[in-house]
Every structure is written in structure tokens, then in C-alpha cells.
Amino acid sequence: SQKIEQNSEALNIQEGKTATLTCNYTNYSPAYLQWYRQDPGRGPVFLLLIRENEKEKRKERLKVTFDTTLKQSLFHITASQPADSATYLCALAYGNNRLAFGKGNQVVVIP
Amino acid sequence: NAGVTQTPKFQVLKTGQSMTLQCAQDMNHNSMYWYRQDPGMGLRLIYYSASEGTTDKGEVPNGYNVSRLNKREFSLRLESAAPSQTSVYFCASESGQEETQYFGPGTRLLVL
Image (cartoon, rainbow over all chains, first blue to last red; front, side, top):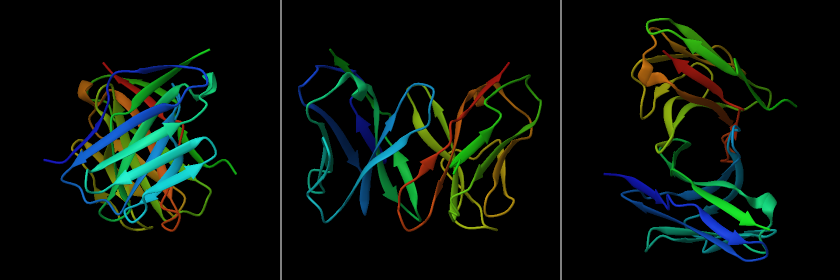
């Protein structure tokens, strides 16, 4: 069966350190993968998209890697700040413009 | 631009009641989506509409119907609400070219 796995345990990290989140998937062949941020009581907000032929993508303090052999994406927040505290969702593209979402991984940045 | 708007923000229903969740987008996007989000389950696709006049089932369509009224609006109807439909419902839209989805603020539904 198809699965998208993100760590269910919250990641507590000291301000200024790099937070790294993992997204593993099985039985998908996504043309691209996305990461979203979700704050409590709000809808997800798009952060980054990485395609199957790209190894790495950066945007400001965010970096995403995509390894289609390992079926894994890593999401990094460098120099983390308390404002980065949120839940981060991994999403895989499938079918006709559809996304399958992971359950999300909460990040708590401690000042 | 308001982006994606949803009404109502919060609703309490009794089992068996019906209601329609409204969604509108002002970004001229072709595709629209309805998701539900439950604790420990993540976002699951209920229905989507790739373009005006078309709708397709997603992962969890049972108990729901949708209408793509025009390019802007995509509504979700619960004909006979059940406690299992207690959830947070999100509408999203996508241009089809950007390949990113824009989400509304959500509707919190409680079915007693």
C-alpha cells in the first residue's frame, strides 16, 4: 500500500540550530514533492517544491533534498528561530494535479 | 486578493442534519480541492475539480457531494451528517501551472 511517513514525535530544537525533518514514502513515483507549513488553527502554506530530477532546492533559510532511490526527502531549517515553530507537511504529487500529504512533523524552537 | 475563503468558520450539527460548506477563490485557478484533516490522520482528499464543470472522487468521498458552481466556487455538501464526519475541512485551489496549492482557513465541523 502507499505510505508517506513523517516523524510523529515533535522536534524540539534550540534557537540558532538546524532543524532537519524526514519524509519517507513507499509505492509512489512522484514527479515532484512539496513542503508546507501549518500553524495551529490555520490552513497549510506552501514553502518549497522539488522535482524528481532535482537533488536540492533552497529558499532563504530552508533547504530540501529529494532522493528518489531512497524514496526520501529531507527538509532543513537553518539558524532556526522561535517563529519557525509550526507543523511541517510533506506532500507528494500523483495523478492529475493531486497531492498526497504526510501527517506532518511538529517543530518547536526553544529560545 | 482574498485568496481562498471558506464559510462557515465553525459549525455544530446533529446527526442526520445536512449542510453545505462554501469555498471561493479569486485567483482564477482551474483546480479546486476539498480535504479533511483529523488528528493523527493528516490531510485526506475528499473530492477535487480539475476544471470548471468536472469533479472527481478523492480518497474519502463517501458521505459527501460536491458542486463546482463556476470557476470561483466549489461547495461540499453533507446530506446526512454523521459523527465520523467531525473534522476540520480545508478547501484549496491551484492554477495548474504553478503546481502549488493555496489553502483556505478551514471549517471546523462538529457532528453530535
